[in-house]
Image (cartoon, rainbow, N blue to C red):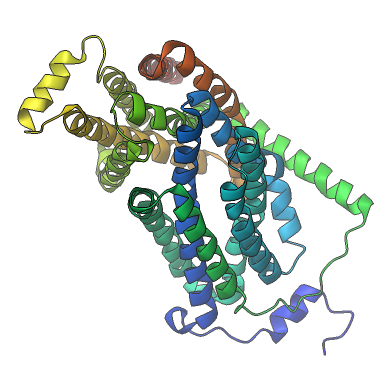
Amino acid sequence: MPDDTVPAEQAAAATTPVAPPIFRNHHFLALWAAQATSQVAQNGINLALLVLVQERTHSPAAVSLTVLSFIVPSVLFGILAGVFVDRMDKKVILVATNALRACAVLGYIFFDQTLGLILMVNFLFATISQFFSPAEVASIPRLVRREDLLTANSLFNLTFNATQLIGFIVLTPLIIKLFDVHAFFVLAAILYVLAAILVSLLPRERARLTIVSSAESQRIILSIWAEIKEGWAILTHDRTSSLAMAQWTLVTTMVPLLAVVGPAFAEGVMKARPEDMVFLFAPAGIGMIVSTTLLNRLAHRFAKQTLITAGLVILGISLLLVASAKTGGSYLLYNLLGRVIDTSGLVMELIPIIMVLAFFLGIAAALINIPSTTIIQERCPASFRGRIFAVQFTVANAASIVPMLLVGGIAVIIGVNKTIFLTGLLILASAAVAWRVRVRGMRNEE
């Protein structure tokens, strides 16, 4: 028994047995398997929910509200959830969140009569999920040796990307086409139950839990708010860092926007089912991988801001071409690729065009995202990076709320194609502004 005068964390460290090598570490393998299982379910739910709402409402505005109900809990509870997790047994949180998410997923089946009920279930599900991720990440150092941390995090990152492919692009569309969207929700609930069983195999934390008084809670919240303001001040003080953050935020905002218009685009323009928007997202993922592998070589020849601006230009032009896939001057593009790719029927001729353009969307996203993140890492003090990136994620999620509220309504009023076209114009305008700011900065340095 440790002495009562010894801090709980030190006592826990002193009594925790040395972890075995990572691939013989059963506790880590259980957590890793739980991560893979829950991520497949999470990514599949993202698609299945969009399909459900599109089939029920046929309204981009409704899809916009659905995506918003995912985003708002991360803005409201994301940082506070991390503070709560630090004061609780991580195993208890992991088991509870997976079990609660299994129940919440079934709510999509029993409460799908109206959009309001779906949004309530979705908000509850997203709120529960805010507590899972920090508990999962914080559990890794507790389970593996220090020298295995890099490997463990690399495996988790690899699994995160692989489960996007499996859940969003392969498994969910297959289940929906063979059965229906409700069948996938049942499968997702089973996957969460399996994840709960896996994390129940983890060891309990030996550290004593801290009982936080109301005064202490208030002090913690004020401290968090002070750190957020401090991170924001550092970002905005440096013009290069703030520009990079704005560009990174622009790309992260584009993902939910595409999720909003994607089902309506698949249904109204491609004349396909909502789940067929996978033809838009899958090539984009491939484009991101290709761009990421080439980025190191490109970074030796071009400045990071040049790469970001090039990515904005590619993104804007690609969106303009996607928007014109069946309207206005698209006839030349449509028939040009239609001749090269011997297909028949509107849908099968249009889908290859969209897939090619989506590939370039993915390339553009990586050209913007990775250099902008690198700029912030290089220019911000190491002791402030954690809170700066917390601010960055919070700002990105908060910044996406207003466009999400607008884009659904705009798509209803003027149409999906014109909404995408206007978005492309705005991206090109931001590329022009970024280039002008960079040129002005170079002149000032001279």
